[in-house]
Image (cartoon, rainbow over all chains, first blue to last red; front, top):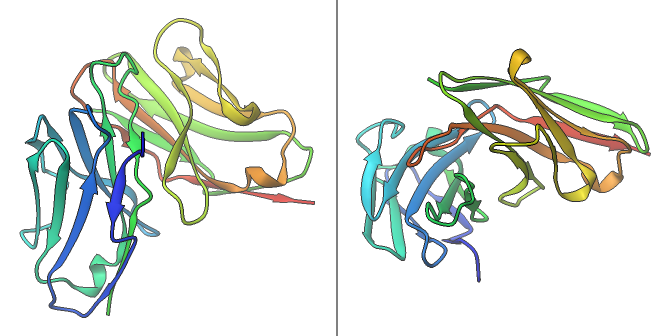
Length: 116
Length: 114
């Protein structure tokens, strides 16, 4: 299995621009998570999906952030408009609730976002 | 509600020395506990996990952790540090229930000197 795939790996954009981060979970996994990692706040859960349905988006910082999961193999996290304080590493993770792995999550390599 | 506290944001050891990274949790229900490792510019990788059963859990790369319910702790240890162990380590908790997310600690950066 290729693992969780994220693209792009690095993104540099200017303030005010729209940014779209992409994630392909491990095939067969029914949960997908988006995290943000910064020096100040550590690793924060933004939102997670179960069977493509958003379950908890209480971690989404504000309306500029939105996430979708149109099908079981693809999810996007969009920031519009972007701001310098959104600069962070964004991780996607997936999990198979039926595998008996007891809530173990598998992480992608992350997208390093820099907003100038 | 669940939470995780990792004591010490930075730990430095010499090569060959004992590694001890501390993690305390709070959980209103029986927890599942995890340690993840993050090498520079990489994603998180599972080191080990506790779910049920034996409270001493062995993971990859010679690491182990012991679940102590009375102390609400899940400290990570390795008898002898190696230079390749230098990384950031995250403790995480989730309730012993389906359909929940991991709650991570702030992380501890481990430095290993020769």
